[in-house]
Length: 192
Length: 220
Image 1: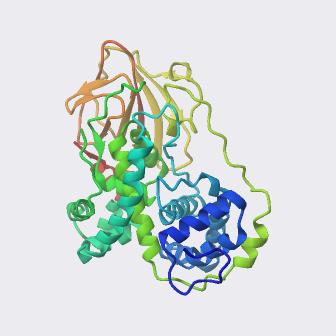
Image 2: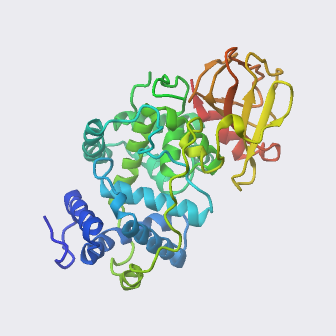
């Protein structure tokens, strides 16, 4: 396990390294751990925001805002629900919506006591983190046309209907590629 | 609304759940999805996994720029108090799904209902997104709405009670989308008033990609 105080590691940190740094930030406001997270995520966040059309300085502002949010909300990060990369992705997604589009992203609070049919924590542990490792591996094997639709969906800030318009693909083709990708990644659950 | 509420039968299309997880839906549509998620654990799991796809894609992006860019500035800001305090949890109103509590406060029957017809009352919600109308609907128990079409496309999510129309029966959490081609006549269950969230794109935005946007919203 990498330590937070080490200088920037030459190899990419593992999910365990990222989770270790998050815990150090949450429990003791560890600035070295934060710097390590910062070095790992900000070049990727910058690429993410630039792809969605934020120009240089604007992208850097959102990157800074995302990382400050990571610092401030660190104690809310729950490793049983998502990996650090996924949690940071959701923060970046929401900050992009807020700062670029001036809108909210309405969400369900998984801890809300009124929530209908909440998942129990043991099920959650299994589904969240193990699924994520599996998803990561499975994504490498997606056919290129399915992977490309997913990249457009996540990076270009376009709903699938707009992707159809931009690419000239029939809407049914875009939907079926998304469905096939979801099936291949085994992301959809049987619905009663 | 209790723990015994059965799971919904009418769900958003999986492509719409991916749009939601990716963050590309406009706020009124994202609100309709989040309201469905409140009732539907299966779709919550799908969204969580679709967010993991986002995490994996983010992690795999080629780096743009050096990791030290801006680090000193951000480190200097860490001790500043947050400009915006973390919002406290909204007070619980048992019959209003969590995602809607940012927009309306209080219990459903006590909201400022505006009577439209004998059987229909509405409350407008503000989202500041032009081109959409977001309302709560209350259909009187046992009442049939007049047979109607929509000038735009309407996405509804049942909050409480239920109704039936040509498309089937709709209970809490169920999503329905009707486009201008669909004429339907919802009839509320006889035993209680039916409350719904309704998101409509305004007539002025009917043409173009927004018209396309809503039609594929729902899978039956």
